[in-house]
Image (cartoon, rainbow over all chains, first blue to last red; front, side, top):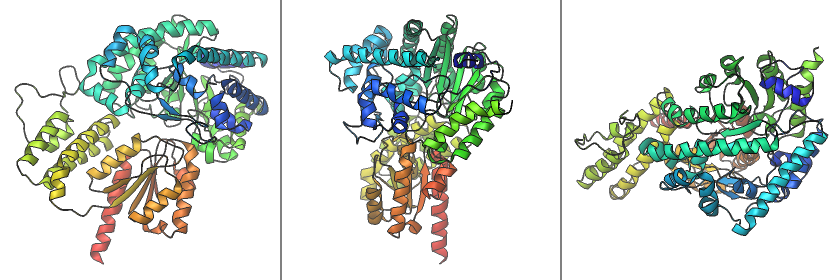
Length: 375
Length: 235
């Protein structure tokens, strides 16, 4: 099987020749593994692309590279992180990873502005300039660099006979609002003044569907990464989840699926209480990517034969464990979660910026070799 | 819990609402406006501010129990902590006039160098204060040296370190080594917490307790502080 065939088979809930391997290798760990500073990759997304593919080649390759080679300032510009930031080489030491500085930027009255004019117009005419050091005249050039980095990334994949894991990515509207408003005020809004939040969520959902279907079609990889780190039962009771997250999520997934696009959920924090809700999504329409705080083995039981799982080698294990520990964990995942297909081996959340080289190698080699060695 | 007709909590009281003066219950029901009004009213008419604070603390204790039982979620913990902070801020000037009470224990909190996340740490700080601890919050991006200097000055019973990034493990370990070198490690209990921490991280750093659950960490501190107090009393 080719890498793409292997990944697609897992998503279709089939059993590939071996478990596909897709670590979330972003510029920060790639910089470490490629011998670059954090400041270097934070200032130059082309260099970040090079770092990721240098690691890809040096560590024997894996199935799909994980798109995400953006400089921090570009992450603000493309609405991936709608927050203030501290950037290595500028606000931080060269070897620090970039930091998100969560503040209450979005104001209560902004919900209705979003509902009225849409998130794109609001973001680029107003909000972005509350958080960024970019000048307005620098924005077109920033977009050009982002497009250039994505094209380079896609080309590097093609040169290696593979494709990007997803063709576009977006924050879930709920998560985006939580980051923009910040966690405590957003929670107060949900409990004490929910109507404006709902109006904004409704509009953002419609905006996301139309814009992301367009972007996915442009890249040709019919998979969308949808990031959500704050809606789970770790944070909110079922009443909040069912009212403010689930209906919008179903709308997104079903609209994408009707176009043949698979949603890859990047779900951080513990989703144990929420996993059963994912059976409400169409079979095979999504991948559930877990970060090791959710019980992936229980998730497999709940979603077996319905949705593919992706994960979840813990960040702490990659950071301070031994290669033997990593291999052992990977084997357990492959045996228990990947046994009957519908599983992609990956890191829990992203590979940590202080990953040990030998641990990263152990994850890739175990993922690629364990099942084949038993055949 | 009190819900409005749309299933969510009511912020403002209904027109026919009569203030019950049950501060603790109002806090448990997350009725922000009611708690603030009650605290102002009762402090203003000269009631013992420590007794009022104690009622709020009792409410926070009930919220914590419900959280531990799985009936409340982090959101409710956050909301109750914000209400408690608002109540405590109203009471502060009255408490200052009333002299000081001995805290249950003293805690130094920090997010270590290389990390500026503070949500978890802030929740823990509020919960600790609600349980009667004196909290010295050093903030975020704190160097191991600064942490140890503060420990030398404050001589706390507990040090709590919060993190959301694996890249801070090294700084946490370094802080512990500096505490050992300064002869301070055995004088205090070290608690670490945050989404990326695990029991293996506790061992790696050399902490006494690890958790990803704020209330579990606070419950542990309360137990250790009470044991310490009991031991002192029996000596």
